[in-house]
Image (cartoon, rainbow, N blue to C red):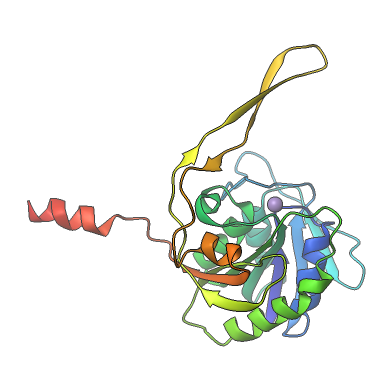
Length: 238
Ligand code: MN
């Protein structure tokens, strides 16, 4: 089985090496990832310039860097390699739960896989610059072993807490954001801003955010359909 491994933190991120290491126990692995960090780029694709796929040095792995987005990497990586059955994205340096799913490049790569007829699984963990995720590896392998046979699940979002104690299935936490803009000054004393949103509400029971608070690995099955079916039914009925 061919497993394409990508991310949004860039091809040289420690997280992608950890995921490739775990994936290599389950199939043939190739890394194809952005040459620079693309966090929060969501499902953007490059449409106004060509993409290049060039060899990258990632010890122990067949690896390539792409001058594009995570979604680009999945498209070009799967095209060049061929016969890819599943895409793993991550391990992201930073959780992707709740509203972050709208912005995440990590999840978007998995989504792009399903759009192209493959399966896609996104993996994320709390942000830690120093971590090589080695302590998480048994949990990553356990999760992959559980999810791989579930072929009916096309798109999955997995988040690891700092010290997992068990695994649970969750739904996406839907909450509003306080769109906090943090002002700072640049070296020329001009004001500029950082977007630093924080959730307005506490994590809801059964959600991905709540699982992380409880020290549980969160697995959320996702679908591509964004339609509000209740609203659609209500309007058709009128
Ligand atoms: Mn990232």
